[in-house]
Image 1 (tube, rainbow, N blue to C red):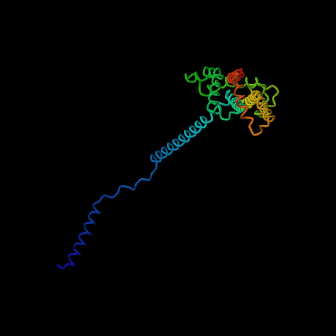
Image 2: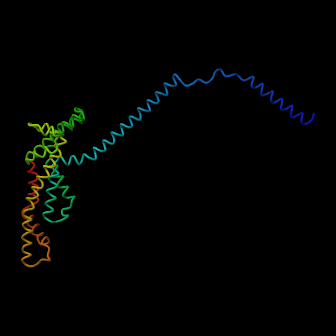
Image 3: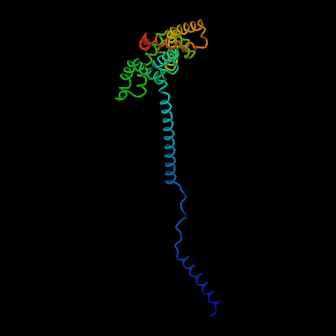
Amino acid sequence: MTRRTIIMVGTLAAVVSLAAVAAAAPAPASAPAKPGGAADAVIAQIEQSAAKTDAAQGGSYLKLIATITVLSVAPAILVMVTSFTRVAVVLGLLRQALATHQLPPNQVLFGLALLVTAVVMAPVYRDVHASAVGPYLEGKLAAGDAVRAGEKPVREFMIRQIRGGQNEADVYLFLDEQLAARDKLTWQDVPTTALIPAFVVSELKIAFLMGFRIFLPFLVIDMLVASVLVSMGMLMLPPVLVSLPFKLLLFVLADGWRLVVGTLMTSFG
């Protein structure tokens, strides 16, 4: 048998074997089923769960942003509704009147202002803790009710200071037209959002008035020293440099720090 014949016989045998294997293999029962029924329900449930998860995460992100915003603004709000504004402004004006520039330093003045504020606001803090913070921590009040209960003592403090300074007209600056046009407007009708800026403006007025009174004796010393130096022909000598020791001597002899701090604390009533 020639070589060509052997190759043809082998090829024919391979074809026959493949045909036999194909005939012996079982035919597919049916075509693959298209997705539907239970599969569609599972997919829909997964999509709904994913949507709820995304919504929950978005809500948590918004709550986190709101919390961070409140925490960043809370210190400024707490400062604005307390006696800190008046105390800090008066102490700053006192330093300007003494012409001591950065003495006492800002840290000392702000620390003293915070301590005086803590003493002045102690009764208000106790009322807030008794009516709002304590019941909220014990679970007796909800968060919203606690805020409303704690707001009342702070509002009473601000109203008392505005009335003490006779600055009731400042409240109308921050009221809307309909509310300001009422004939019989009571303090209960004034919202807190209008009461806080009115209180700040009132505190600034009182603080600058107190600062003016503190400035007067030191201004007299400056004028006397300047007139003496001019009469002596000592024009090149700064009057502030000469008047500073006399200012410090007057302030120490009069026990100025006790007078200023005591007047500040008693001015809140």
